[in-house]
Amino acid sequence: MMVREFERLGRTAPGLDMNTPNLNPESGPLSSLLREARPVPGLPPRFQEQVWRRIEHQTDGTAAPTWIDWLAALVLKPRFAVATVCTLMLAGGLLGSINGTAHARHDAQERYVAAVAMTMAP
Image (cartoon, rainbow, N blue to C red; front, side, top):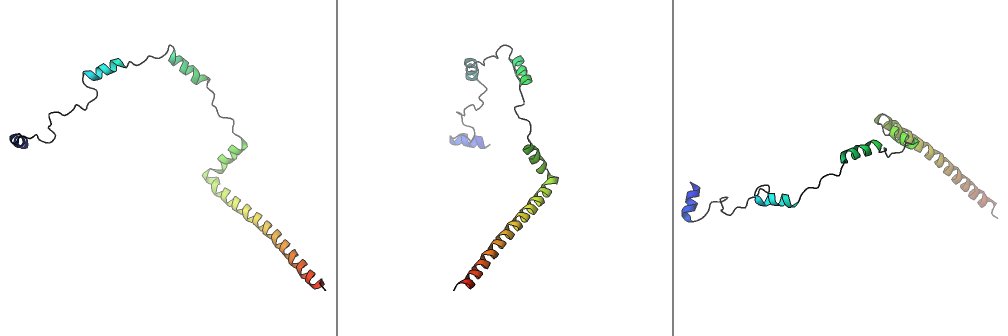
């Protein structure tokens, strides 16, 4: 009904343009002509056989895992991750305590020398 009213007014209904291009690229003589102009090259002789031969003879390309790879794989497992974090925190605390004790001893020695040196001065 709306189309008739548009025609009566001398206009075309929206979406009913006469010059609508064909948006399907696979239809028409131009598409077939383009396909013929661009032929697909064939595979070389014994291609599939050569591919399978290369797959069979191809090495893995990875070296044997080293002890570092083994340790990293072990540490990154979820059940060992918490134990690893706790162990590293304990080791850090222990090393920090040892280092702090050495610094405290050195500072105490410096204070003692400074105190003795002041009493020895004339």
